Image (cartoon, rainbow, N blue to C red; front, side, top):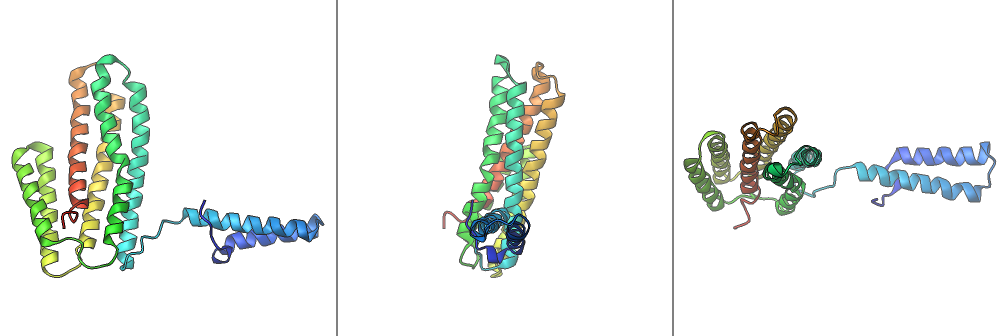
Length: 244
């Protein structure tokens, strides 16, 4: 639990004052007994309230910080959802012939649970202002997205093309001298929402298909592969500045 100054949190201070008044005037306890208890209640309440607050990222742009906080909360939600999916898959996929499918689902869950830490890493690199993304790095990432789009088909190709468009927009912003960090955060939000949607579809498929029929479970495998592609896009966007 984080320590906090109760004076910054009026509600815990009010609760502590009520404890003091009730203890001294109603219960007629000695003040030397009630006062430490009231201070303890106020301090604990302030620590609880502080723990409920999102961790400050200390960015130079308040709007950017709010946006990134929202993205991080979305990442936390996806990570929490993946934990439930992991448990459900463990209950449903118990046969020897289902181990491959279980492994595919668990892999998707592993990647989802890494998202909050990756957003935190990005936030640390964003401190200090300026354009996070260099044109050279963005162009390198766009070339990789173009190569992946040519080498794939179907949903995967659409996802790579989508990322290519995102990178092209960020290149334009960087060339214009704009802060490309906000554009990157918007792109991350879109990809994380897409990841959440794929996980939901994956859970729905686990609940509805005949898990003993390999042909039907192929849809679950396809969704796991789709999530892997979304994750690649996220990794590419998050790590776009690491080669700088």
